[in-house]
Each structure stands twice: as structure tokens, then as C-alpha cells.
Length: 97
Image (spheres, rainbow, N blue to C red):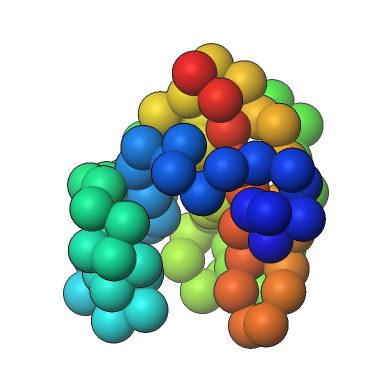
């Protein structure tokens, strides 16, 4: 997915998600394989991020906030360069500082 956007995977500086995913094996392994930190945020921290997001009713019912990936990016980065994208059972957004 990163390469599809013409981005160098070595440019990834961090991975982020909601705190209930802190032990999710795939995310932990991704951050370890990239040698980057994995930051997690509470639903309240994510809710504070302002903007127009592609919300999911299912995600909102499950974790308490309708969009995790774009909000997690914007806590860490200045600009969202790839909005929420779903592929192979995962949802990703990419930002740039």
C-alpha cells in the first residue's frame, strides 16, 4: 500500500492506533520489523482531533470513536496524505510531518 502511493517504506517513522490494539500481534510485528515506535491513543484523545473523517458506525460502536486511523495519523503528523484505505483486512492512513 505504501509503495502504491509512491512512498518509500523507509520513510515510516511511527505506527499508531487506538489503545485497545496495543497488543495486536500484526501491528506490533509491523512496528518491530520497521524498527519504529508503536504509539497508542485513547478514544478520548482520538475524539479531540478535529476534521472531516470517513466515519464507520461499526468502529464507533466497537471502540467508541468512528475513525481511528486518520485521527491517529493527525496526532502524530502535520498532514494527512492518504485518507483511510482498507486493504487485506486492515485499515491504514498515512501522514507526513
